[in-house]
Image (cartoon, rainbow, N blue to C red; front, side):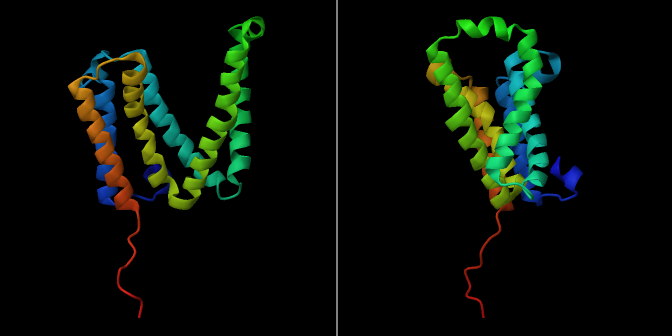
Length: 193
């Protein structure tokens, strides 16, 4: 996407890493059979994770321009306020005002945690990385989301990953490492003369 919008193509090895990681994502989401993506055999949650990868890519491209003018904390604040404003009509339509009175303290504590340290710090770190190492090296890490979903489903839901999912995870890791290494400028080991 960055290549099409910014007309700045990644190096060939980085492009190979990107394609490898995306292939891994499709293998993980399809439980080892990428053809399921085309035949409707993928669960709705998997489509949401795939959509997350594409939305985050678009977000990275937009954020890159914003980072030229705004500090990370300012960008995070505006991003969260915009997101809250966009989701508010849907929450109101779904009965948020009727349900807000039934939310207990544990849920409120979880929401505060998600809103303050988890989300804010993660976005600040992301924007800092975007500013320091650029969109490709930062954005490629979104491909790890399906892999972490697989890991957390094992840890918390005790689901056993399919061998195809594990193979897809290996493709994701290989692709991310390849893309980042190919996009990282090498420092010369020779002294400057």
